[in-house]
Image (cartoon, rainbow, N blue to C red; front, top):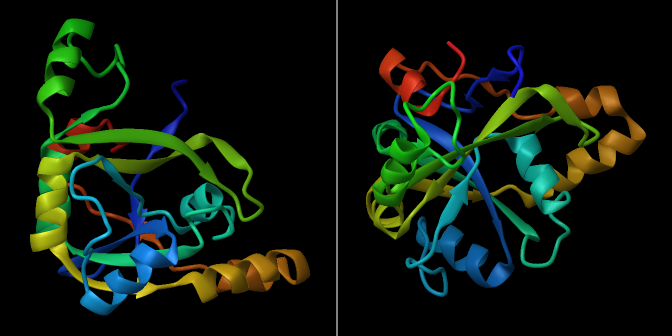
Length: 200
């Protein structure tokens, strides 16, 4: 990562909640929307990744067309839970500018319930922005328990929005830009920004 790389959480949020995205097939998505949280056949026993960036979710799911990712969900979480995840995280890759040593990083990684990954943010045409990173948050089974049972307030199926914006990117890019979710910088306390290696 070069010195000009910029890491920032941008998201939809209000005073109490923050929105993240996941994509699943209908067998998981439909019951989740109905229940207002994840229920079987969603697995509580594997790592699950949440993403605040709508365009990164568009990239990851191929605009909700990839097998197993045809339903895009917007999950609203309590900010207290989201910040718990950040506070109990470690970066998924060793960064000599962030970690005391590779051994200390490996030791922390082995016990951390949450992993942080910074990937290139995407443009509207799903091209990587080389100097802007978007956060992905990996929840281990321990954290997934909190996520499902304590943090989620509501779940929306935003697949129609995803498809509409995709169509507009080809027919009317300026309008597509205007209907993207209004994500804005999330106000991270300094200790959390340091914890996750965000740009302050």
